[in-house]
Length: 209
Length: 266
Image 1 (cartoon, rainbow over the protein chains, first blue to last red):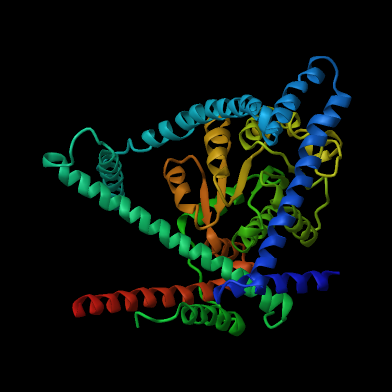
Image 2: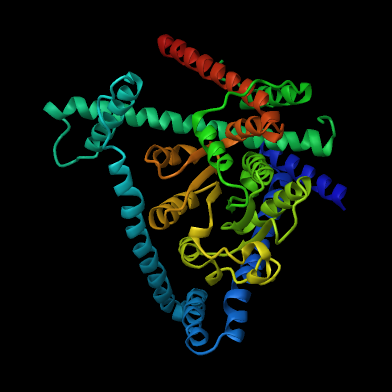
């Protein structure tokens, strides 16, 4: 069974790689199998790890308030599915509004408390660290970088005159960050390719120990 | 040169990967400070501490993150820590389970006593808040339906206070949610391992001391494998990665020179 699995995986990998030459039916076949199996797998997981234990089993075992409160999320879930019925599809907006409201509530609080404030706090560093000139340079880059990059996003005044130079520094630093991010992305994509080729050479062809 | 077919570039890249893998040449791996910090955080925990592993990726990130997960699990078991695993991405569950079972077998660890897998729950932010308050609000049982209180290692684990370290293995933005809720609200110690694509997003957290360390991409996995002295998928792929990077740099240089010549001609 394991060997059959390896052969199927190898075949589908080669089907996907065939797109590098040009689009073809083998690529389409592998793409459709991937999408279909992922959706089915996720459906089963959501049912067995979420709907069943958190809703059905909980409704059976809970009593009082804990039991009846479960009707609200169930209703919201059903309402969400009404999108498929065009005549009453608008009702699904209630469930969507609830989800957006919940997401915004959590997002705003956690964003400010967990990201903005700690990041601002982290820029409160000494400009001169006695006996450690490397840290002094790092801190200087950090403070100048934060201020100039933030200034770039100040659009109420044309980027001319006194603010032109700091904004140029800010955009240059943003470009450096984009470059680093792009470099990391290239590395990530190559790692995925290495992983697939390693699978073909190691697990399928047994050419690599 | 401007009309070179892209298929030739693919062939060169394929050769740059296949040849180093076949020759199995190993390049020395230098350990970077963020990975060293992640390793030290785990190593300094007292034996028997509970470590929560969050599997926040799926098969599309497996080549990068699976070697990382294996290396960190090996380290945790080697240090006699208790491992609790959860998944925030449904398709990550089998990957986490495979790694957990194989590493546990290597170190003779038993289920329920040394490690547990609680499975997947949807709603990342709600799950993280739940773990901060009472883990049983969201996970009444493990993935197989065994009640949490009947698992010996879970009897005293209720919330973030009982979890010494969170290890998030990330392919997306779930790591941000861990930091912004679990760390900011509940003071949870966090180490993040991530794909190289999302690693740059996590560096501000490290600089602000919101997390203890970062393991970024296959390179990070190779560094961690070097630290635990166990050659795995990370180290095996490093030579191919380096050779391919050199090839890409050469392509960029050649492409730019070609572009300059073309522009001069016009």
